[in-house]
Length: 139
Ligand code: TYD
Picture 1: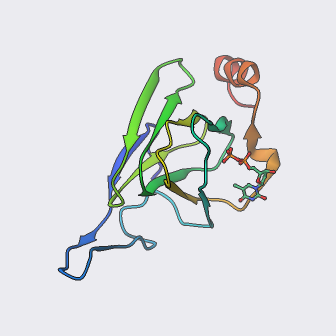
Picture 2 (picture 1 turned 45 degrees about the horizontal axis):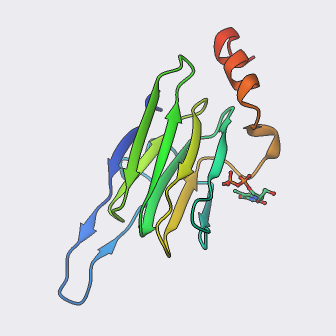
């Protein structure tokens, strides 16, 4: 079942004196099956990534290293902000959530699990269009 609200998902953490280990696998509390993984890194200070919504794909964003903020806007206009800094938690984002990733710390790495293969047609990159679609339904 896909939840309609962005929320933090706990990821298993295996603590070990040699260093900790976390993992994600299909069937483990993730609200979707993983079709694609990508990661964002080497972000210069002050730059913003994302700045779009998706028509149908869901994502889980994990701060593998460092920290950043994910600023969200729901179709009803409600705004949220999630500070990600721990590799054992992820932010679940369902479709039709406008999102921007800001405040990247030095050497941060954002890993993103997606429910779909890359498809430019799934992007809503125009915020005015996002607001119009939010008001009228995405079809
Ligand atoms: P984009 O999704 O716009 O970046 P951001 O995560 O900041 O929103 O992607 C930037 C470029 O990379 C764009 O030209 C599309 C390409 N791209 C792929 O080819 N495959 C992918 O899986 C992703 C996420 C992006």
